[in-house]
Image (tube, rainbow, N blue to C red):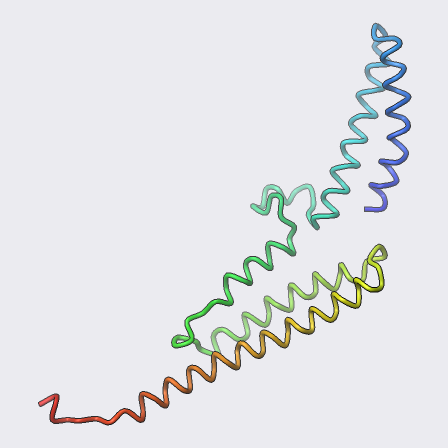
Length: 166
């Protein structure tokens, strides 16, 4: 992002100068070519800033996450996967995959927190929120396990009246 900002800063003044030269001499092909070149450099710098802000790369548009950064897309996917039917919850099946997905998201957030352009207060807040989300996942999984065990106990404690089946 810093490199793109530097390129934008450098090329903005060059774009002004090249545009002024083209406006004064529209019949000279070199002034048009110069203006077009600098304009393209400014566009690329803006695209670089946009990609850095959204945590995407220029090739991510082909992967289906257009307009959404990788971290935001992973959060959306995790949000969809975390909603489970408590009666069909299997700890062995769901816990490892949910924890793995969350740790992947948290590692992406940690990369943002460790960035040189992240302010200290933001960095601390990112770390605190990551820890809170870890704890929330553990609480949710525990609640799912309690619901499953309560449902099993309820089924076991049902009185069986064999005469109704005869």
